[in-house]
Image 1 (cartoon, rainbow, N blue to C red):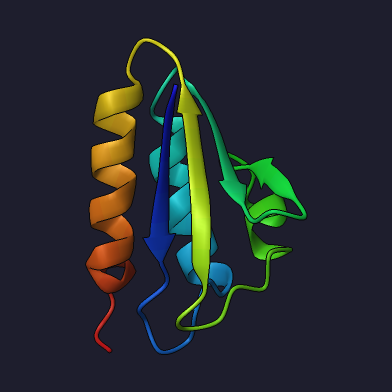
Image 2 (image 1 turned 180 degrees about the horizontal axis):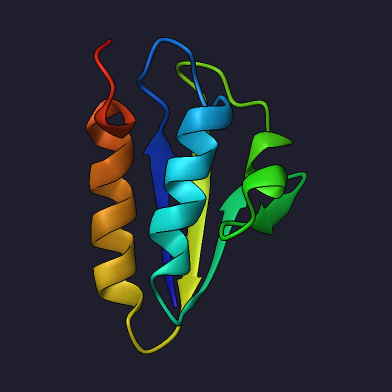
Length: 89
């Protein structure tokens, strides 16, 4: 199991388009992927679940990944967030 923290850096936060990109990326992996905070972790492969986090810019979320490809998943998802979800900021 890999647990890491990620900081939402893009101006609009984890909005619909960003949540869709996150879930699409997460869905490429066989590992179980959860994202959230102390109060609630959600399925990282579900766009709607990720959107319910309502994470604005500066929010620090925990990423929990378990499975055979957990290292690759952690690396790609972390890079996606760090790269502003591929959007201009």
